[in-house]
Image 1 (spheres, rainbow, N blue to C red):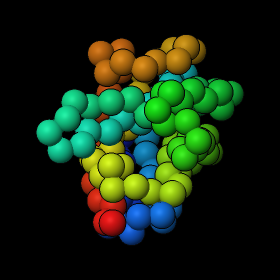
Image 2 (image 1 turned 90 degrees about the vertical axis):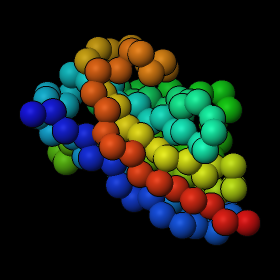
Image 3 (image 1 turned 180 degrees about the vertical axis):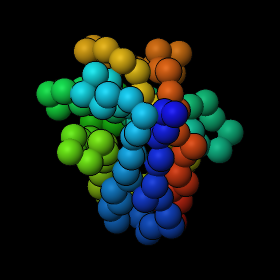
Length: 124
């Protein structure tokens, strides 16, 4: 069975950093793009970043450039999302998702598999 397990969320003070993990299993990791999305309270889910597992090419949504870094460890079938200089507006549930293919995928509808999400709360 395909599984995406997001973890690493928690309560962090503004200005701090956090690294989220997305552990994948049940599919050929190198054939997939892994994306991170987030959904803040009362808002729609929005794309954060996407990485091609095969070669590490990364894409960031315009509003996410600068403080977010996506990376992958193919030996561990895991994708990471580092968030620096956290702000209260980064408070959200962060989800990872997977889709087979070699492009950058920015829309929710493009993704096939989803993890359960991990809560990030940033206090001011």
